[in-house]
Length: 484
Image 1: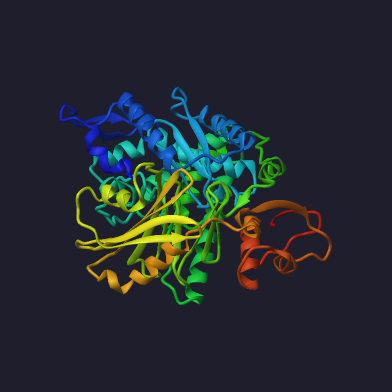
Image 2 (image 1 turned 135 degrees about the vertical axis):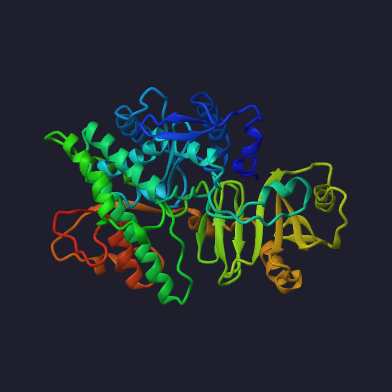
């Protein structure tokens, strides 16, 4: 696995000359080192890499709907001449991002918390604003730490070709561009909303949704005695609340562009969410507590108590609570003429393996060993069907492998095919729409919910889904999103 940002420098030859160009969206003069054609070419290259790590959600109707809404907004932008591509990513993350040249992604996890087509258009318009203002080009040209996968933690494996597969750890989000650029994208997006017939107030409504998410996450962390999670999509909301004066100032002028019939389309949007997986999907694998189930590949894993998990398209990574110990599982083609032990030696690329041991579990053949070095790494390979499952465990900051090796081995040895009765556990929870009845409360909905967690957390989660956070209650007849 390789972050395309890690090879960014290779994409620019020494013949590129720095210069100034008039920004097509703002009219300002910006320092850039990339022509528009180079920007478009870079976007196409990144899009191929990002698509591997962010597989699209397999619902053609939803994809077509999001593309339609996105194109409606982009057609009223300052760069309507370029081709825009809008993709729903099969991920529970609350995220959206744009590549150079008009490739825009929105995660289904964010879709679940939006409540109207206008809010969807606001998210897409915000990302279109980043494209039209060439924010990624400006950051690269100013030699800032532009990284298309956002903050990541390198944990190098040293296992030959497998090194590329586990050298980036994280939730694969694109970090914010900084307060000024985020506000600029809000202002541009609000303009595009108004020009395309949507209510520009939806931009502020989306910021409310995101701000509420952050407050909920912080409240959960405080009650559990954990470190508060860093801000995710759209930058740092401590300095960007929905009533922020500057946000009102950048969105306000767009209201003058609005006609008399700006649309919201709440019901149309909600109908497209019916049946949407909430959390994990069957295609990417489902986590249940400390167990992980994958229906298509027919396997399950168990993780140590208290450990977290990152489920990526190219790796399943579990880590200790302090994020100092990690074990990643990746997928490779089985080598018919090599036993698992020989496969490991081949992957080690001539490096010496220690403590080699064969594995036999649930009818599967495998091997495990320690790859000495600094840090030392626990490695394993297990054959299942026509695939090889490769495990690499490591500890950061110079700690000894022995301190967590038992847990690495417990993860490896938990790998097995699913039992028949476990197959239902590999199916995701889904969003469904109901119409609130008289006397129905958030508390009663939480008691009926299939979501895990304490009652108070479930109530807050349902409120977040329905724009009722922190204390709102439904009115009879309201359409509500529930999880079953």
